[in-house]
Structures are given as C-alpha cells and as structure tokens.
Image (cartoon, rainbow, N blue to C red):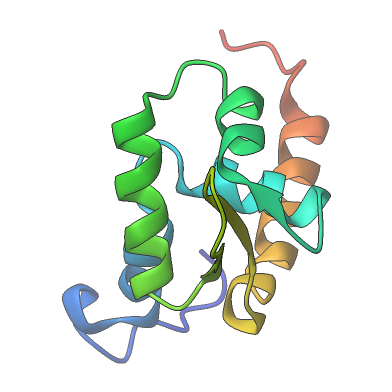
Length: 115
C-alpha cells in the first residue's frame, strides 16, 4: 500500500483491522449493499430474497451483529404478523464509499488475465 495509515500501530490495533472487523463475514458487505440500494428500509424477507443462499438463522445473526455495531437499525412494528424493517445508520452509510471503490476495482479488473 502506498498510504500507510495503519503503519503507526500494530495491525491488531489498527484502523484497518477495525474496519475489517465491521465488515468481516460472508454476508455483511452484501447486506450493506442491498440496504444502500433499497433505502430507506428493507424488510427481513426482502433481504432474504435478495441474498439467494443465506439461511434465516445466518441472516438473523448477521443483522444482530450489524445492529450491535451500529451499522444498521431495526424497526419493529407491533402488529400480527410481525413487521420488521432494517436500514442503514450514518455509521453504515459511511462505508458506502468503500463499497463503491470495491465495485470500481472489480469493474476495472474483472477481465484481467490471471496468468
């Protein structure tokens, strides 16, 4: 890396490692993507349909982690059947430029020869 923003500290205590801890896991970046694309909110089943092969349990646990990390909010409506919506908090929205850069990198390099 040209910019060594994390060089002043050990990796474990670096901002880079902290950022990774927020988006680590198979589905967190995908959930951030879908919530950003479908603002202001998405319902649980909408997310489940958008992420084809995620189990209900995995989606539920991942959303709980992201809510605990203050990336997303959960709004529950007192009705039967229950209605729950999820959306991005400002902290989650601040990751969107990183997602955009990942997308741009992928578009720039997806056709690169690998040999």
